[in-house]
Amino acid sequence: MTVVVGLDIGTTAVKALQVREDGSAGDRDERVYGPNADAATIVSAALELAGDGPVALSSAMHSLIGLDAENEPVTPLLTWADTRSVEQAERIKAEHPHLHARTGTPIHPMSPLCKLAWFRDQGIEAERWVGIKELVVHRLTGEWVMDHSMASGTGLMALETLDWDPEALDVAGVTADQLPRLVPTTERLDRFVVGAGDGPLANLGLGAVQPGVAACSIGTSGALRLVVESAAVTDRTFCFALTPGRWVVGGAINNGGIVLEWLSKTLNRPIETLLDLAADARSDGLQFDPYLLSERAPHYDARLQASISGLRHDHGAGELVRAALEGVCRQLGLVLDSLREAGYEVREIRATGGFARSPLFKQLLADALAMPIGFTGTREGSAYGAALLGLAALDLVDLDRTAALIGVTETVEPSSVRTQARPSGRAFIPNTPE
Image (cartoon, rainbow, N blue to C red; front, side):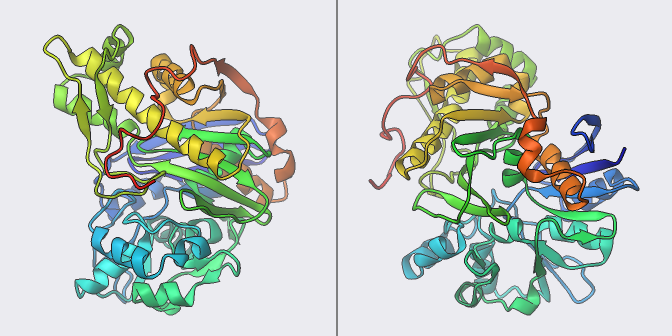
């Protein structure tokens, strides 16, 4: 039986998951490097886990690095969390607001479009511009290619044509020759399937590909997404490609598990200990707006900063951690609101990510979204989705039938509707335009 490795290049780790052609998952491995790793460290970790059989790739989106004529880095690797291009983003949004609708990517410092404009304004040049996934693919195959899914997260590709957008390229100050060749997500390069972005693949890996079935993921960051049949963009949502006839709409938040990591470092206690303390506590009037890395969805305001309000002398680590988790879940609740405001039905939610190890975190998410949350047998939704896409590229599975391979093994019901984890309205977000 053929086995495909889903290789997921994440913000803090590379994960590899073996998946057989009947959909069953096998061995799992990972290499952890943390959120500030350089490109060489990440590439090395990915190559170490690639093995010698069929591999399909997944990757965190929106990264950017400049290379010289010898394909060596001349800039640091900028991830989705980098906000140095905030001024460029504001200028582009004012002068070219239609680029969001045309490319599917909100005009925000996360976007390579804005990062490229920042590099240009700094006088920094490169022979070639790529993301971390393209660099890994090149090291594996010698080819410079970018799949339509990753390209739809750059702010540089027109959704209608699936080609580089001339106006976006001009705004960014680059030419098409400086970018990889665009290919479908199922493109095969020897034993490698190019794959897609981690967000769209999480939907596939969770079986959340039918109308009204959303995928929610909380890893370092977080997101809530739906698969739709045609490209559609609103002011508060993105639209990314997956495969022909499958587009993913939704919103991503900057601050997921990174909030717990920050609390662990700041309070000098293991995450497991903090979660135990939070399980025995109540936020008790304490509110944590978790914008440690500013914020993306649904308001895309890169100037937002984290804040804590209602803090009292009798509050301790447990109350603080619980309030922080509630803040993360509350933000995903606002993304759910934005999808519904855009006219999308959300009748079912499936979730994946490292947060699923915590019963408390899962319960708070169900409470904040005011809906049951289904969990499948694997926490590696993006890696599993990549492997399924690889199996489809090898003509071993039908993507239209992959949802039948994925069952919900646990459902967490909300304990109440509109709990403290999710106050109504948006008043807690400062400077939010209505």
